[in-house]
Image (cartoon, rainbow, N blue to C red; front, side, top):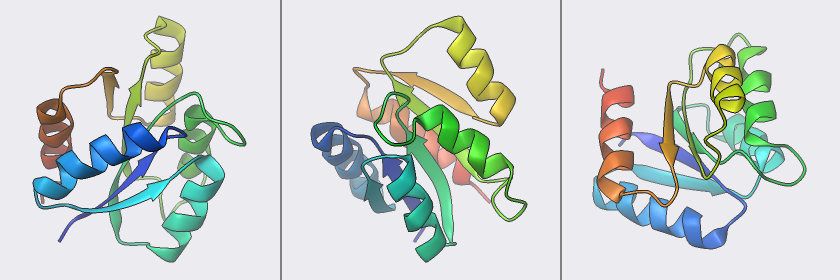
Length: 122
């Protein structure tokens, strides 16, 4: 089963994304911020996709993506940003750091599932 890490400081959003992806056959892990996400990725090196908010305490989603790109073992990890932020500068910064997708909140579960399937297909 393909593992996905959902990173968002909103428990409601995490549970909505987790329900959608879990119902689509993914194994879902959750983290409340970038710091928890790094710890979770350390404990679960087989995670194939990170679905990540931008605005979070301790470590933002952009900081997380930029940090992942510095680690050779995780540089290829697929990341999709799931956020209320549509500012072009943030989109460009995330893409430059390696984010592979951008989904706006409020989101449609089928969009998250489609992105997860596309980015984790072997």
